[in-house]
Image 1 (tube, rainbow, N blue to C red):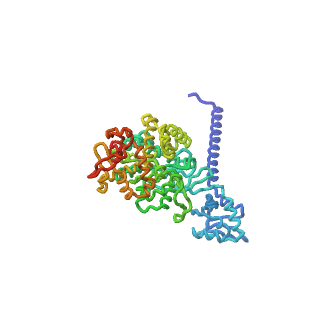
Image 2 (image 1 turned 135 degrees about the vertical axis):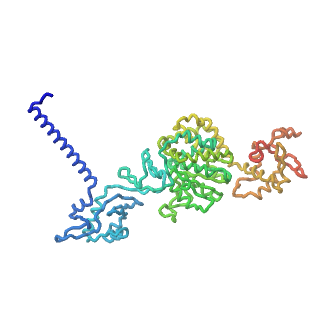
Image 3 (image 1 turned 180 degrees about the horizontal axis):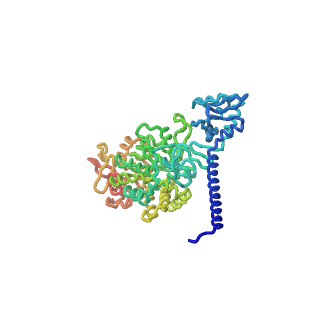
Length: 580
């Protein structure tokens, strides 16, 4: 190997030393930057302020010197201004004194005694200072305020614009983050309530698969279920714009799966059913229902086993006004009327009140074929259903919903129905179509025409609840097996014959007037003549008087028992219920 000259070796050594020195300086500078940053982040502002006011602190507390002697004024060493809160226009300061956070109201800053009283009520710490020192002490505390405001947020679901409390997660500005008791967005903080009864999954579920579960279990009524669930996510915004929001009325006989359906709906929001559920068959009170309603912001509340006694109460939930006033800070006191989320009703009771009917979307479980193995499978998968809520929040905005609802409403061809009923179903249909647009393979879902036809049929069914003739036909059906009516009603293979006056006298004595205040003799006769149920002359029942051909049969002579009666004749194949 060739030897290097001494001068070259010396130059190489010199360069190496310079490089090492530069590297050492850089490392030292980086270390100092880290130390300085740590000191900045961990500086004791309370101590700095004390020293600015000619006070100091050691391990016994805050002091100053008087005649070269330490005079202690506190027996705590650390104070930090955490944040402020607003409560009905009153500013509350939250201080951390040593390890304890304490809320101080304005009146508790007015004097040494007021401050000390609050301090001693919460801790073993105290202050002992003359008024002039306390004035400095108070000025030091207020100077630590960085303008950070915290707001207590009551309940779950949507608690502020772009902020949802979802139990184990928080939806903040279009992203899912872990729950924290206090969430800060710049200088604005939110104190959130905790619950283990809402749990949002981070895993993704194919919304098409979600549709498949609901469709296989509930048929086309899955359109109503998922459309209503989508609308619920925009409850507060929609209510603000439109001043109303329909109720979901799940009607079924006992044991037909009402509880199972509401459980699956709650899983779409990650909710345990017990958080949303109010058992109206028990000791539920109106103020109890309102207190739960105030917890659920843009989340559904389930009124389970609703009875007739609650009909008057639920009307007020349609326009967002609770039927009682309630103050969340004092459950015994009623101050505020509000409805924060949608309402789901389960009941065996058909609505007889017109005002209830016009406020509801109806689902009937009596007509579906129950499939327990599939329901059990859906229940097992339901933990992942909660991604439904995040998919809605991520992909849809209120304007998307309103546009879809308006477009869908224009295509409904049921102008003769109640405008309120049409608007209710337009909301659900529009929301379902908006949901469909964000589902991959959505072409496998019902197309727009199928959805329109189905919802128009639902509108007609809901409208029929407003028709008193329906209730008359049901009463007539009920009387078939009653001995008291055997002299007034007869049937053959094609027709039902009944003497109107005789049947009417029995019905009038038996029905409860509050259910059928609009059911009058004249009204029912006129409705029967116009209905599809009534038979007409010259079909199978012929007469010699040609002038009556084609007219409704309201006075046909028929022998019932031992006597001939003048009867109304109805076509059995057109009648609902028992007759068909």
